[in-house]
Length: 205
Length: 125
Image 1: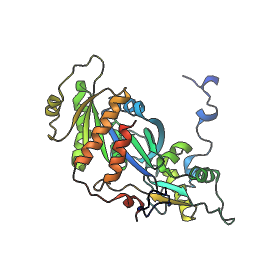
Image 2: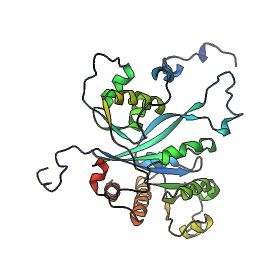
Image 3: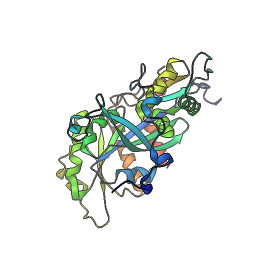
Image 4: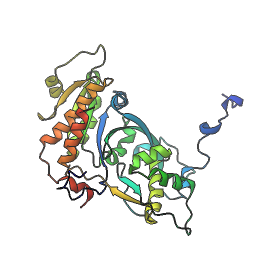
């Protein structure tokens, strides 16, 4: 502590930085497996506004004013130190829960879109979403046992991705492999033009 | 299938005894403050004044906030829906019992120092 003489914040407790990366992809592609391979899994309940898509699906007659429904979602937490935590939020795979994406993606550093080469089409929706919002993302191809392996460049062409979007092959069950996916996301972010606010910006000071 | 003795729900399976909206006393939106999923809150250490009544959930929440904690973790630890947690936290914030230490910034301005720390943290896992 005494060695940080140049740090005006020394001795004052700095708020912990909480960061998040989104894990997106189609239903059943292995998002929860990926998150649990590298982090402590927690469950969050959230009520969401009934969307247009719920009309005719959820019977709300007789409960005037019922406009929300409860959704349970898993998230992961990686604690690096007392003052730095990374959260991994899996985006809901079902179309019905699209409306949760805006809240989940607010303030996210970036995203990994988990893709299965047998069902590449399932990842189109997530790719479109991140492209439209300008959220940096990488494609992580989950190499299921027995699945045919493709070259990342071929997958990039099949998904019609911008050349700068990284494509990595991974095994969502393996910690080292998942670690590499997340490192690829952060390295992508560091390559982008970003503002250097200095450490104290996190304190608002 | 007709309902029989085997179909009865007991304890946790029967769901919460007090419905979430009752815990939040019918409110679905906090009055003040933006409590994002990864906003960090902490108890201010100010003892609750005698003039206000805190419910068991809010007392539990205050104890969880002794150390800085995110809204997502509070909601997960308390097993309460996020919206209810936001309402209760907003009450505690209004009364000066908790404060918001940080909220995430829109991603247009990621902090390069934080990014490097995350990268180093991941590599060290």
